[in-house]
Image 1 (cartoon, one colour):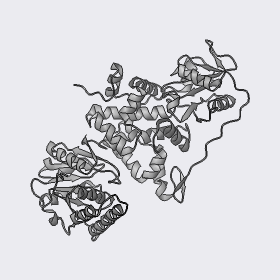
Image 2 (image 1 turned 45 degrees about the vertical axis):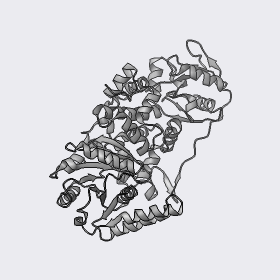
Image 3 (image 1 turned 180 degrees about the vertical axis):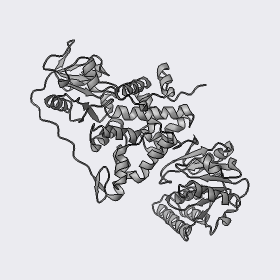
Image 4 (image 1 turned 30 degrees about the horizontal axis):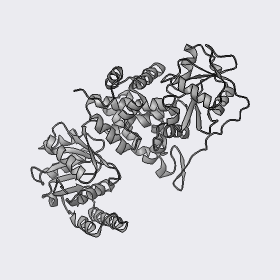
Length: 506
């Protein structure tokens, strides 16, 4: 195995530093551990030794490899002990002046051709390097926790970074079985930047009282296949971590509306309601288990009204087939009868607007989310409008639950829930490509591995159809009047030309 670096140092031996040291040692590199806190480096070596002992006991590592890994670990008593290292990885506190101070000291210790990198997740690589005499050998090298399991590493070039440095780091990353992705030095790099849409848009939906937190989580998991709902995820990461990141990226992009944080998380952070680790977040936790409220029961309905479908409904023929499968009485006239349940299926628009524009009886009108094929989702989502009668709401719920598929009924919202959250994710990703932050391929790989999304954001856009994503965004702008939803030029042009969102110009 080619190690790319013969002797590496890890400065800062917390969870991230230990994980990085483990990967480097397993790649065949001699690793020196240094920490300003007395005894921390030696403690990290003991912890890593126990990790390899555990892997050996489970049969995932043989005795020879275990011994070789342990022998590659060295404890440094001072920065001077790192003089022979050709790579130094810093994994200390996220404070610019502290990082700059450490690297200025390291420059006077290591050889002129040694590579210096920071595991920063939020600071500018260029800003850190500005304090150095030789910024060309400095780069960002951002791992995710837990390092052994999170198989993606962001390799970030500052304005003065030598491209050869990034190439060496990418090769080193592959040597220990992780996937390197190349990023330009912009706020949030790839993963934290691309992840802005999921939580912030879900918070906007919650802020409009479209549905409660548990319902929103269920919808996004069951309709799009996210492993965790946005509120489950924020509880897991904790708001004292995630909210400052929201604010940091928003301000670093000079109040770009696409990244606007929420007063909901600001208030909860101020009140200490930060998530699972304190037992209280968007959910309450007992013995570490979330106390999730039960789903509302399916209403008991007698004879169901006939159903009339708007001629402008998305996937109209598929909706007709679904209604037939559910044994609904379907009206096919040019206008609904006075008894009919009226269905609209908008992309991005709200039910209220369609009822007004199409001159429908709003008291009998509901929307159904048909962005995706019904067979591709585990949940149907219906939306009322402020005038919808309770009996019509309950009849629609009972009808669409006839085959025992889960149904959520939410209040009116442009784009329901999944449409607006996914469109926001896709739009941010498209604009990252427009800015040249990374390649489309690296973006989708980084997000899939780093955030656990069911597919990359650009693949999501292609799955839904770029023209449909554009329609959702244009209509969201109409409903809300918010520049947050303006489509990226990357998305708009590819949608207009019928190209994949991964398409790069020749």
